[in-house]
Length: 554
Image 1: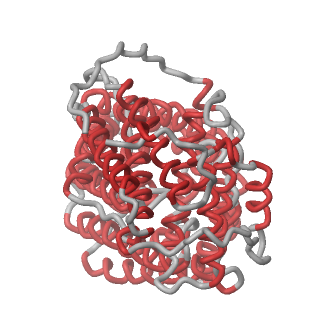
Image 2 (image 1 turned 180 degrees about the vertical axis):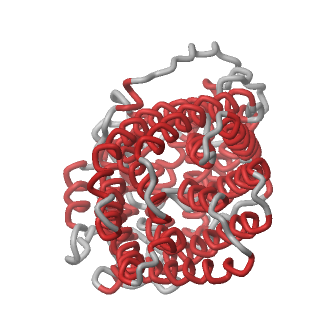
């Protein structure tokens, strides 16, 4: 294992891109699933409250209904647990907010509670990798609830409404299992095959091969994790999917020997509910050793890495809320939520999200002003407008965050009408000001709270890759090594390489730190992927072209 000190490199010039962060991408493959789910989860409780003439309670039912936005990429066995955890997390944040609102009307205290809740929600969502929409929905609900007048006696009933709607959201999220029980695993496998095909088209050396390789490695690991979390007893379908993931891994290890057209054809065949294609390779042993089946958990190290992000969130949200109060705006939680929505894995991504948030919110304010007369025709019209914007937000947000925000903003403004009519002009002005205040102060807090340990994490990831590669090389050097040992070594090395790429990308986006060991990262990835190719050949999945042993020996 190399112990050479990191080689410093010149610091790249920092740019603040505008057009790039607003460019639209392709919609998600399953954009319609969260869009339809949120409508199905929000509509029945809201329409029932309209019939009962109690639309003022819709804030609490919507808190539970919005849980239907989560976990659409998870296999159903895992989705059941994740959705249950999201519902409980939503109820915990809502309970804290309602109790605080019932005990004090001091706005400074309430903003402080909201900022602490936002930081806790950010850390928990990132540590558990709950996925989109992450902490933002939880923070919106808890922050808004802080400024709704409460009495202690009302809290249990309001929580009961949220819990009932949360249970309904759980059922909505699980309902597709009845018609397509392996849908999430099929999609994850198809994504891995397509990503491997894109990398194979670069032949491992062409333009963009480094990014394509990182994307393919992440997709393959995600597919493996999806199959692993689908249940302890693999069905025939999941075993067939696992064989396809092996073919994606083979293409990743040896792109020049892969057939991109065949990989894409396999991926296309996974759409719908038809039979999973047969790879026609009986040598592909998909049995996972016990070590490979272990699901990683967030430890103290992972939580420590999130400390700067938690500090940024707490400080930024608190200062944004205080500034809104100082300006005399009656809904400081808007500024607080704006700040909470900005914070990403590093400063570069945070800057991009800041631009997207401002553009989307200001455009959304104008859209709200246009539709407000229609929404104010009555409670039913208000609910139908909310449903339309809920669908639009989820349908568009995968193309770019700002585009989804164009629908999220009028939705948030319409929700204020549940308690009674609001003046459109005041709402438009306050939301626009709070957006600018929250974005400016939130980003300033991100600049002030630095992550000085990002470079240290890169060095630790480099060490982990070196160790995994050396272990794999020792296994390869042993003619009597068991197939399970080779498989475990290969997957450990693949996981270490994926972590290195993610850590290096995150560190590259931090602005105030020492120079990163970029050359070491490139060399470690190059040698690691050569060793991966050697393990694949050792497993008999590729012909041996005479691999140079110096590439894999310690």
